[in-house]
Amino acid sequence: MLKLTDDQLALAIKLDPATISLIVKKTTGPLYNLIFQMVRNREDAEDVLQETYIKMYNNLSGFRGESSLPTWLYRVATNAALEKLRKISPDRGIRDFQDEEFQEITINDRRALDEFNPERMMMNEEFKTVLNTYLQELPEKTRLVFVLRDQENLSLEEIVMITGDSDWSVKGRLKRARSFLREKLAGYLTEGKVNYEG
Amino acid sequence: MKGKDIISPQCKKIVYEICERMGEDMTSPHCREIMHHIEDCPECKAYLESLKKTVHVYRKTREEIPAGLEERMMELLKHGPGHATP
Image (cartoon, rainbow over all chains, first blue to last red; front, side):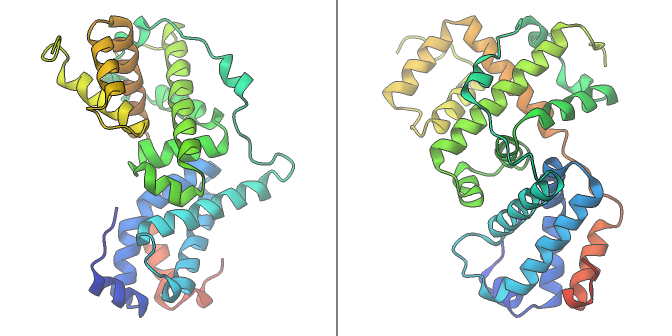
């Protein structure tokens, strides 16, 4: 996402306005996508993004460079988004897949996905809504890992640093997320709810 | 090696991804075993391809930044967050 040279980082630590602007310019899109996919509300997402940048501003001088600045920002944003979710639904808690829940998923007819043309389907607004609905069905932490890996293209090592979860746990969540979404998508296409011509 | 040139570059890439997830090198015996199986298994090939398509469509569904968001964040930090209304 953003790689700072040592000189840029030194300037940032002194709260150089131009460097802060560069950081915001490079990180707003990726951070907003991550936060929005977690809280699913534009106003809440903007609040969380604002909180993330305020924390960055207040704590940048204490940034030790143990992780890259973007990784650190992702971690701040992740914690703030999970905290927002707890505030929105205090009784719900943060869900996770139960093993038995996951094992109920069945392998759908693969032909539907064989014939599926992703490029054409992405022109279909209804299809995009369906994709988002399925993404929201993932438990929060599973969704978080999927978004970081498959939308933001971060490495597993970075995701381990951001989430604070073990390597094993991150891999397991990613596997379950991909399989779950694949089954949902196959089911949707198999039921013939969409026009393949997009 | 049997089938070494049969598997498509795309499948090789997928196998590489699988092995990476498992924390193994693509040349490890486990990964070689997977690759050999996939060469002869249309079901596995199709399943891996469908997983790849699934990830591909989700890559394209990133949320767009609302108009003016970047500017609002710049403004927030311009004079320090003390001036903002969180």
